[in-house]
Image 1 (cartoon, helix red, strand yellow):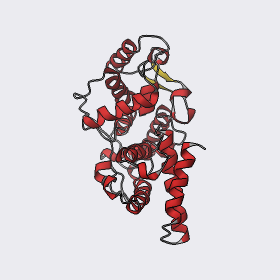
Image 2 (image 1 turned 90 degrees about the horizontal axis):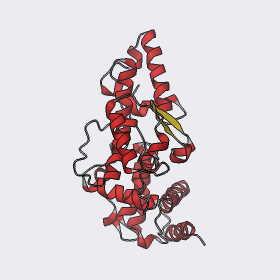
Image 3 (image 1 turned 90 degrees about the vertical axis):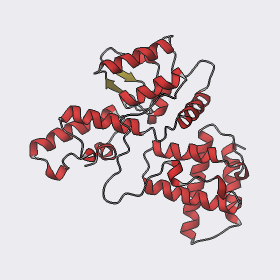
Image 4 (image 1 turned 180 degrees about the vertical axis):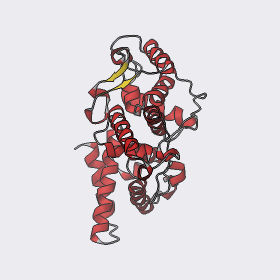
Amino acid sequence: MGIRHNLQRSIQNILNNNRTGSYDTQANRRHILFTFAKDIISAGYGLRGVNGLKQKHIFVAVRHWQEKELSVATIKNRMSALRNLCGIINKENIVPTNDQLGIGKRSYVSLKNRAIHQPDFSKIKDPNVMVSLQLQRLFGLRREESLKIKPHMADKGDKLELLSSWCKGGRGRSVPIRTDEQRYWLDRAKQIASDFGQSLIPERKSYIRHRNAYDKQTLRAGLRNLHGLRHAYAQRRYKELTNWEAPINGGLTSFEYSRWQKEIDYRARMVLTEELGHSREQITVNYLGR
């Protein structure tokens, strides 16, 4: 019997003995908690029962949901189910506040700008982690991509070519190399991962172990919600492509664009859709506003 099955069965046993709310509420709560269990096990944790639940598991799950770009409302609903579960097992104290987890307020009118434009990496001591953070900042990479990337293989001179095995959903892509700063940090990555087929994960570590080291270092350095580096990349790139600020940065909204501005805006968003590894132009609203 697998670890995930054990954890989900443990959750089900708790829920069976604590039936509160309507049938739909109970079903939704069960679905959320089973998803939480799946995400924790996928992250490499061997949690077999809810009594072993710790605060680190909650931080990991929330980070995963934020990286999937789930809405604030969705994440808050999931946290409500987790708080309910922890209350039942007398572990309310392990659940951080939404502020501690970096979960923003629900937005019904305008998007919150999550971009991190001037991050302070001075407290990062691990050179592999430092380079991965810089690649996230300068190329708009996701965390997983910035760890799994094999710099020698990715460097194609004028572009960074990301293989499908490094990318979310197996969707490979290319990102142009346009600045001296990009070239500097890519060359630095190649120095650290000196062998052609070496990633930025140290040879002695698994992906999970190195990702955990990355998480610990960034948290200790006071760095949270680092998906915001990707948002900042999108906003800088949008301005470069259009010559004006994105709506989320105070630029004109789509309702104020002239016909030619709408065409430029759409072309820029399509470029960014590809560079960020998405399939729909609509997703750029999360980064740029509309």
